[in-house]
Image (tube, rainbow, N blue to C red; front, side):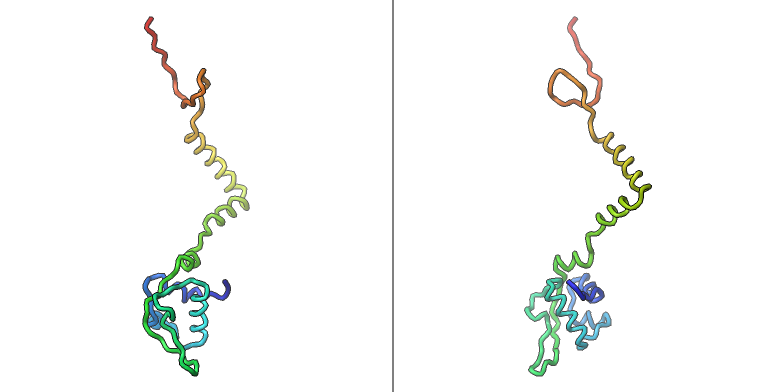
Amino acid sequence: MRDIDMKLLKCFVQEPTDINKLIDLGHNHLDPKFIRNFQNLINNNLISSNSATFGLSFSADKVPSWTAVNIYLTDKGRDYVFPKKQRKIILKLITENPTIAAIVGVLLAFVLTLVWPTQVESGSNSPETNSRKVMISDK
């Protein structure tokens, strides 16, 4: 996906959106560049509508006309607006900064010592947490 107009795409975050809202947000609905960007969002499945035309039609001499129909972000569009890059950013920070890597390593080791139960050697094969065993005898 190239040449995605992010300013236009972000207009669909507050659903539903129609051509009148886009005009209110400052888009020129008759501008060929706007129409091309709008069609690009459709072609990349970033927006959807209950109308097959998305409210856009052309006359025989290719003059655009608009009808107000509800237009929504698709799941793909939402992922494009709100990318899931946090994991990549965190991994990059850890791998490129030795201080952060050391801190994360220490924190991870600390958490694992709290969460991971220590096994106590016993005669049985059942795992037991690190606790004192009390033997009760009838003697």
